Amino acid sequence: MSVEDTTLDIITSKEPEGGKFRAMVIKSDGYGSRKTRSVLFSDVGTTVVEALELLHAKTAEALNHHILTNGFAPVRESRSKPRDWEDDGSEMSASSSGSDSDDSDATSVSNLSDDGGPPAQKTRKSSKKHRSSSRTRVRSPIRPPGPTGRMGVPPMPGMRPPPVIRPGPPVMPGTSVPPPGLRGNPPPGYPWRPRPPQGFRVPQLVEVPVPSGPPGAPGMRSARDVKIGITWAGRRQQMMVRQVPTRRNITTAALRYFNLNRDAFGAPKEVPASSCNVCVLKELVLPKAPLLGEERYDMTAYHMDDLSEICDSVVGASKKIPLFEVTIQGLPGSQECSDGDW
Image (tube, rainbow, N blue to C red; front, side):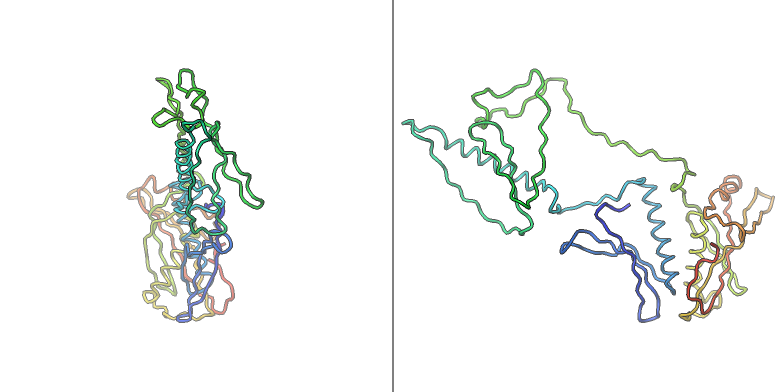
């Protein structure tokens, strides 16, 4: 959902103290010497795979929040400074106002003298501004027709052409137009812009909202409260989180809780660099209606990632919270590992 000229890179680093790995999403904007980089997301894990999984969970939650808020539209980037190849509105407005004032000055001194001689010319001095060589200020070649309108100078080779200025709407019947003898630069106080007739309204652009799909549509799943029972070496802890009920979200949240609360399970705080913890989704406990107990399902043979529909079938009727039972298993000496249930 990033803008068109933005580049995203994923890198990993290892901290010298503690031996933890950090995964980061680096955002790059601009080109060449103007290129800037910043950290967009980051997360820390005891192994490279764990750091990448935690980073993926964080970016997935941020993307889901963006889709719920703005749909699939790209991220809007507010820029206080325009790029080289784009139109600088403030500069063009200053150029336009400066050219209008210059034309008015030229008109005031270009009238014929008393003896009918040639018009006097007024010399003007332009102050030089310190601008970079890559930014060249180009005046718009379009001028009102008339004897005082200056012709546009063609751009030099290699220079970007100025932005195209679209003409205004056609003159409506009944509008005031300057007389033929006063075209070009009218005297001060003359209504230059044509006045629309009474009852005429200028059409406005209306932003059409993006229609949102039903709650169960793909990409529009909502977060809910779920309970996770975590078991390691015969010891069990239970936690509650609010997130989209998917297999990867459940196992990632359980593994994060285990790594941050190892003393609650009696596990050593220092993890060997060669070990790898695997989180396996074992069982799903769905509460039934009041006084009817609960239903337990073995999830080892169920490989779908989305568990929202299963939760909706029970949560909507009993108004209770589903429970996911997971097991943390250690695989010492493994070079690569996954969440164990794909």
